[in-house]
Structure formats: C-alpha cells, structure tokens
Length: 311
Image 1 (cartoon, rainbow, N blue to C red):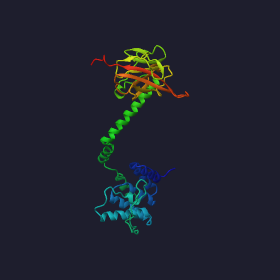
Image 2 (cartoon, rainbow, N blue to C red):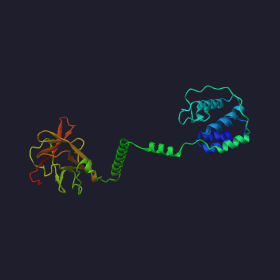
Image 3 (cartoon, rainbow, N blue to C red):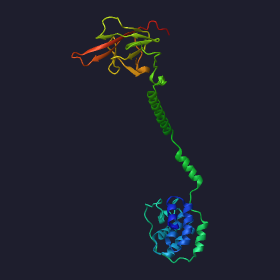
Image 4 (cartoon, helix red, strand yellow):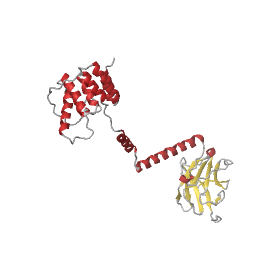
C-alpha cells in the first residue's frame, strides 16, 4: 500500500498541490519522525515563517538533512536580501520536487543549529491552516491570453494554409465524383460541352457545334478540312483519338509557338485552349511521329477570323 508521504510526493510532482497537502498532513500523523515529511510540506506552502517552522522540525529530527539545510540557508539569505528574485520559491532550493530544478549555483550549507521544540499537533495545525502555494488566477488568465495571441502574419499564414487544404480537398472530390469546380476565376474562363462529340476525332467546338479538324500528314497545303473560329480563344476537343494533348504543340502561321492548357472534361473528352488571346490567322496543332524512321508530324489546323466579332 502506498504511504501518504509517497502519495503527497506524487501529487506534488504532478502539480496537484492541494491534494499533496492533504496527503502530507496525513503523513505527519503516520510518520512524525520522518524528516522528509517536513521538508516536503515546507516545499509546497508559500509562507516563509511556517516554512522555517517545518524545516526546523526536519533538522530537529535529522540535523544532517541536506534539503532542510538548503531550505534554511535560502530563508536566511532571503531575510538579508530584500531584493530577492520574484517568483523564487523554497522548493527551488530544497529541490525535493522534480518540476522545480535549480541549475544555479547552490547556496552554502549552514551547520545545523538547535531549534525550538514543537509538538506534532502544533505543527499539524500550522500545516492545515496554510494553503499550498498557487499563482494568482488573474495573472494566469493574463498570461494565457498573451500566449493565445497570434501576430497578423501568423493569422494570415494560417488562413492561406486553410485555403490551400480546402482547394486540394475540392480537387480530390471533383476527380473522385466526376464533377467540375467553378474555378474559372483562378484558371481563366473554362468552356464546357453541352454534349459529347458525335464520333472520335479532333474538333473545333463553337456555339454548341462540333467542326471536324482533318488530320494532315505534314503542314496542310489547302484549306480543305480547316474550320474557322470566330473566337480569340477557341476550344479544341479531343475525343477517342490518337492525338495526344501532352505531345501536341500549337503553332502560329509565323512559326511562333502558342502556350496551351488542357483538361479532361465530362465523358473523358480532352479540352484544349490557348493561354492567350489569338490574332487572326492560321494555327496548327503539331504532333511528331517519334517512331517513324524519318521524322514526320501530324497536323490539325484551324483559322481564327475575328472580323465578325462585335463589341
């Protein structure tokens, strides 16, 4: 069975000072001649006069008790030095409680003295009337509020992180459940299809209609199979075709390459749009045939004609 002294020590180490005081008061009755009981009870109260009484009792029982000697030396020094450090506690010098380690230079141990005699009942009454040391609740509340305050930069960073995780979650959900997100404000305007293409191939999609883009082996020499777009950012649709979005490059008639972006829409159709507004003229998607002995390329072309666009 665990002794009251050990229960008090365990409670003190856990920071439960009222509980520790109750156990140590029982320990006074059970072990009145145990100097350790008096050292521990002196360590958890915060009245210098009563601390001295308990340490006197400890040294009366065991004149060579080092924690009690340290405690008395500390109390004597504090009486002489009125400018003692705030929040300096006896337990920092007796060091019976592990949460209060003292890494400073140890005070000089004073030799034991003859102390006044006090009965166990008197000392028990003093201990019972003295509550354990505790900090001011108002100060604790202020410190807790200060610790909870965040700087504007930290609040901003937390907001950015939260938005990023929300966006990632929405992207994952859209991929899992096959729905499109309303993120046009981030990625630019994104056209959608009213219906799937009528057959496999590469198409110019405009005003709800599909215009077939003929596949040419090499640059086209005539306008046959080359549809015309009235939009400065036309939408191209790949549907069950050998054309590969990742290998296609958009080339203007001047030879300049136009950056493009693509995405997979409903029914697995690949939608491609230029990242910038196009000037009037001929544009072709080029896809190299890497497996051919002689390097060839397939072309899918369209013409941009903005002459009928009205403001």
